[in-house]
Length: 623
Image (tube, rainbow, N blue to C red; front, side, top):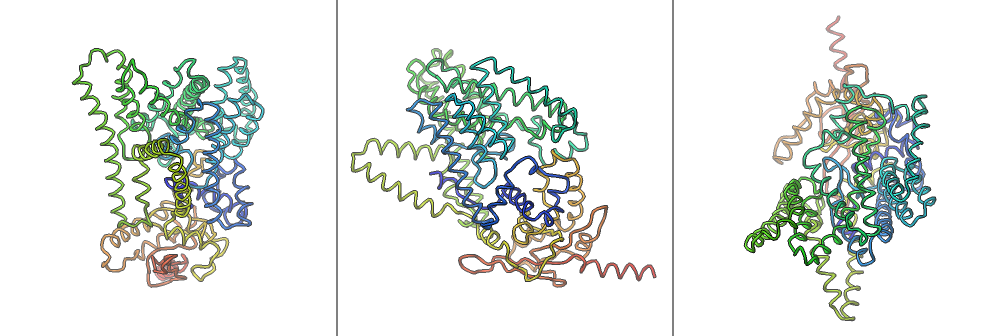
């Protein structure tokens, strides 16, 4: 099920950043001039780029990222199972694992972040190690836990630190003497005062102009910028954890772990609000302590089967609280731009008040309430499915661009229904039926493995073209390249050409760590804006009407791109999906990897070819 509902779609999102960090380790002379590294980068705080660089010495990026994405996924769920065994009662371990697979994985703001990401970054591996460390901790293997936490932090400090906060709250619950560990603040403060390494950012403030630049691209780092929808998702997690924490003696380790996680959420959100939103300190803003929510969401999701079943079997309260709880979990979790999580603002108070008002509610009102709650869950499901079909239709119903089967079946209510039905059939079957079921499961695993690689044709071609001279032209190693794409991505220069990228919004991801990055980025963005705007219009016209005349970027636009307007130089080369009919240095006909059909053409141009005529005109005018 992990393979089927969570397919691999290639080097995308933040995996592009980890790719270039590794390429920078291998070729610092080429990539050192890239915006991502000009003012320093977040790669300075992790050993992950060195590990990936070692891997890329023997394996090309495409297959390497595919294989280790699968490794990260398996490691995450294996570590999850290890922690679940240590926290949950035996009866609820498998349901908890299935809940983690079925339920949405998003946390934080704007549906940007999720645990167990479906691409290769340091985060899933660091999360797996963090879960393993927490599993060791609840088994009272403290020193082994500390060592694993150290490794998790070395791979991705932000994810590791979030789990460490949970671990610290767990230890303090058990023995108050762990509060003495707060004395570590003293040497940290001293080192920050002495401006030692990144700790100097502990007392350094983000000025108003810098903050404005950060908000423009990385709004999620400030709690004050989160939307009500984001807070509804946080509220859902907190409520589910609260229910788990008050199970008393029957709750055992799971109740204690939920309490520790709740305290960790309070610490993380409070520190983020005070140190980042209010005091505007550099280091706390970069640490993003609100990321403790990834552990909170993980535990809340894993607890859903246990909480719903116990509520269903509570004869004193009836079935309605269980139904309300299920709707809270399904509607309140993070499914990007589809469900209505603010519905929990009504469902949670109703679930809280039900024990006190149940005796006053008549049978007719109860039936009406049940119908309303079921309708809300079904409406959310239908709304999600219709949106999926709309997106699929916009992509010309092309399964190579969107696995609509995966998108539609992976909705939690749909997938949970299928899993529960399969479990019931298996338990009721005789020995032969169970054997047949097991055989069919193995066949299903093999089938899911064959379709797990769901990269689009363009992604396949792009990742297989690395190291190939696709344009038939040697771009110098010291060149920077601007590569226009309708969906901005730096993969063209980084992966295909193995050259520094001129500008992409991806390169601004570490702007809260280095003040110069966003300001340099703004100048570079202004340099390319005229071409990006015109190319975007051309893209729209071409997609809207296949019979339209070939579109091109205007010559003044290209001359503007290739002329320095400030202290920074223009790109040395640029790539467009348009034939400008002059100064073409190379053409790449991108073919479908299976059929050989030409998908699109990319054209390579050199900037000096476009400004030479302009220089001659200017010189004649001066004469």
